[in-house]
Each structure stands twice: as C-alpha cells, then as structure tokens.
Length: 238
Image (cartoon, rainbow, N blue to C red; front, side, top):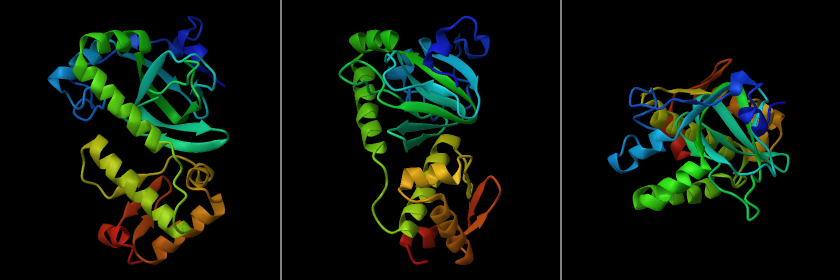
C-alpha cells in the first residue's frame, strides 16, 4: 500500500510531484485553495504540485508521518480514516490535511477511493506565503477550523436521517465543486465506508437506501443515486 514516502521517492515515478496549477484547471472556479480565483490568494497556485495516480486503497499519508503538505483532490475521491473509522470524504477542489498534531505529524490516514490524483501544497511553501500574505494566512486558518468540524462523524439522529443527511451533503458539495445542476450523486465509496462514517453497518446503509428508493425519493444506480425529490429529502417528509 502506498504511503506519503512514496510521493518523495524517485523510484515511484507514477507518484512523483509535478508543478501543475493554472486558471484553465477544470476546478479552478471552485478550488478552495484560491477560493475560486480570489486575486488575494492566487499565489497558492505557484506552489502546488500534482501527485498521482493513486489506486483504490493507496495511502496518501498515514498516522504519525511528518506533516509536510496539505492536499486537494484533483480527480477522484479520498477518505480520511482515524482509529479505524472513516471520518471524512474529500471531493475534487476541496482542500484538506491542513491540521497537524503537536508533534507536527498527521493524525489520520488519507486513502484514495478508486483512481485519484491530488494537488499537493508543500507546508514550507504555504508557511512562507502566510508570512507575507495575511489573506492567505486567514484563509488557511478558516479552512483548518472547518476541517476539524468536518472530521466529526455524523452519528446523531435515526439511521434514515443520517443516510438522508449524508446524501444531501454530497449533493450540495458536488453541486459546488462541479458547478453543475444535476440530481446525480456519485457513491464510489463502499457501503462499509459509508456505514463507518455514519456509525452504522453496511447492511443498514443498504436498507436505508432501499427505503428512500421505495418512497420515491431516490433512484439507485450501480455508481450512485439520482435524487428524484430533493424537497422531500430536505423536509424529512419521507
């Protein structure tokens, strides 16, 4: 399984960093690193590296590895795993792995879900930018606080409420990062991963999705779900 050390290793050319960031990137308009192209944050583009491809189950970072960089998903999907549980999923354009422990190490694993490419923001470079740009320093602090709140597992409410909230969260986030108005919510992660994130078994996830389908709220595909009645999902009138 690949780890953070594989990124720096010259023998693993598939994961070797390459400078790659510009306004023509398909996620430039929604990239959190520059807040969609904010002129005060564009210096972030000068330090980014592209790393990948990573395959299903490959680790981008692992617990106790030195905190050398933050990341954003360029294509694909990633998950953060801490103490054996999935605590976050990361979509294209979203910046994560910003927080470091007191020992300046990562506290969790970041794992690829399917074939995934990442943008890497070296910590030494972003620290230097923060010293010279108050806007970048404030922006990264804000994202760091948000990341801490995102990595608290969603375990409140009934199983149906948690699965519904999860689908709506991905629906809203995908609409933001993809910039498209679509009812389709890709679910490339396993039912086991979803259950781990929501604090329930994979079988319960499957039953709740089936219930939402029988209520006419969603249609289930092999690779995700179609949201058929967004209003009823949001209102909870299932």
